[in-house]
Length: 347
Image (cartoon, rainbow, N blue to C red; front, side):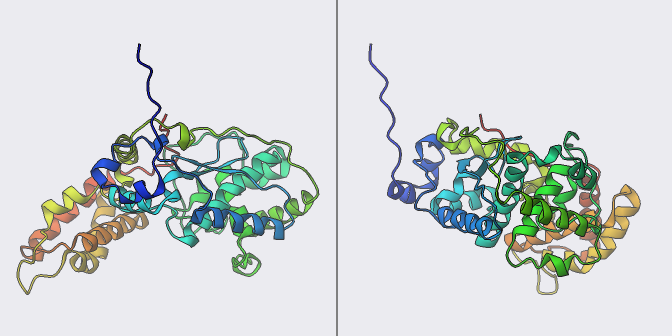
């Protein structure tokens, strides 16, 4: 009986030079990825320096996995594997049209946020009465959608989509991230906001743990990239399916039906310019017929404008003919809108 040959992991050079078609066939576990020697190593080092400067003794371990995450009540930070190699960053942008954490500032924001979760779990802060009074019950169920109040001053502003309002645990993580960021200037920025009480609580509790070891530690690495048997192609197919209308490319087929990739005539504007001009009009009509908030409708149209800019789309008929089509499309989307949260489990 023949024994199975163990597949050799790719070298960095092989990964860099591999064509997309061949790369998508590779299993994630065989990509040979590590944090060491990458830009992630430098950013994690910077994160640890920020913690040290604030007197926090605990430095959460970081590892590569399928998404940004901190496993429930496990003080460890998961980072998307694609950030560990420039070739995978390139593929991520092609497949998903954006790279979450792909810039230095965005990556540091996400690292601070996930570290907030890890600190919360390491010292079991969520069990404290004052924590529950300020942030809410940790045991509250996560919902597939949350109704955010974009102008509320009860929450800090850190990640997009008013993420602090998604759950008490996210509220704490966002508050911690703002508190930790060296240039946030939270004492001045949030002066007079109800959210200041949360920031002051974080400031107080972090001073309290400066000389204390964490109550919880772990060596476990759930959903580690080194154990992911999925090919890159299967990974992206499942992510797109999971994200639904939050996937940046979700609207492209519909936009391509309404607009065109070649100019119509000199007197017809680009699709993006048309949408910018008619944005308020569309928002008002759709809000009337769907009952959805104007803020959310406007946010969708801004996404559509960005996609039209990316695709370089044009009008091929008079604006008066296109306007009803666009309005009907936006109305249909808003009648089925969902705001997704949570992670993608690749195993």
